[in-house]
Image (cartoon, rainbow, N blue to C red):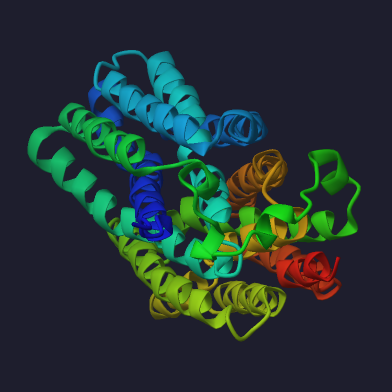
Length: 410
């Protein structure tokens, strides 16, 4: 009897994994206040741990990508999720600032590099070709849902039982929910269980030639996609890390920033679902271009119209264009370069994404400190997004369906 296609289970597992990975990695800011109250550690010093996390994450993306290409996504994702869980449990023992830098800034980041978006995108891309963008969008919704679920949970745990218990509970979620699910249900390739991508009964996909990292680095299309993705990183983390403080600058309460990011995460989840459905009728390049334009408009809006009510509009418009960019870029790179070296190729793209992300966080804080306002930072974000729009316009159409037809014609 023919077994049912495992692709949907793979997508479900990656959704759960991204919920845990992104939920945990983005909780750091909520621990700043209790750590400051307990040990008197300055906010600037604690913020450096976030910058270290982002840089470490970026540096280890190509490393994890290479390991995934060699050993497959399953063991790398499982071990990395376990490392994140252990790092959070160790964080509960923190009494010195250097420990927080090691546990969150380094160990959590290394784990996140191996069980975050890049790793799970490679896994989904191995199981889907024709429906790749749609399924990447569905699995990537876990990034948004993780924020909506785990960020409030973290706040509740800190308020009711203290920051040490919060670290432990979050770490246990990774160790006893995410890791077992990956180990039990994930298979590296459909071919390992005598299945085909998308559940297709033909073998044409297996014949599609895959490019190497060196091939990608010599490709104009790779650099177009990666430069656009880097502008996404700059503006994504500029907002994520500085929107709460900007809301306070405008007279909002301390809780407003979290509310705005929650609204953005919800808008992003809805947009992720819609863009995934639209990939069946609209080219991924065109959808990506629309999202860059929407985010550009959001940045112009927030730079020109500072005020509390304008922030709510910004949160919705920005949210629509935030996380959905990730599965689209991943799908485009996968379509052009195949799966054999996809970990290495995506890892390099993510490295540049994180370099720009760290720059966005630093430049946003620096411009705020010298001018007393975030306006210049937001205008810079808009200018960088304009670059992303321009380079994406020149992206050529080269979908896997065209490669498939060429293979069939041979």
